[in-house]
Amino acid sequence: MSFFQVNRNCNGCLACVQNCPANALDYKDDGNTRTLLHNMTRCARCGNCWRVCPNDAVEFQHLLRGTWDEVATMELVRCIVCGEPLYTAEFEGTLSKRVDHEVQALCSRHRKSLPLGLWKSLAPVKNQGEGARK
Image 1 (tube, rainbow, N blue to C red):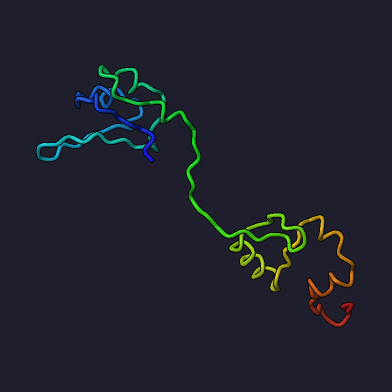
Image 2 (image 1 turned 120 degrees about the vertical axis):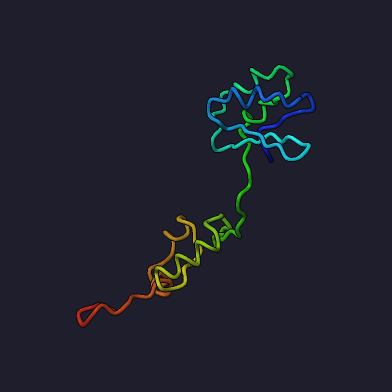
């Protein structure tokens, strides 16, 4: 969704473009048409375009809403005991590679309650030389 919107009152006078302190507005003429351009990364959200428009064509309220845009959706991994969301499947894959074994999906509450014998099966000890305990 574009946050900067212009309604049908716009007559292309360019007052907004000429008075934008951040140079976030521009236009292009192509044949018989004029198109107004807005660059959100440059926009200071100062409202000057809205204030100077003689036709009330700029709908500045869309810039002030502060809505959230969905940018990525990933599968969740949940605790195998209680179902609490823990992390994403993608993160689990990264973590498993770094620790060089499969990660058990347990929340902190259930991780603490595991008996010591079960911990050994979940996190195998690597042989660290001749003096290492087994």
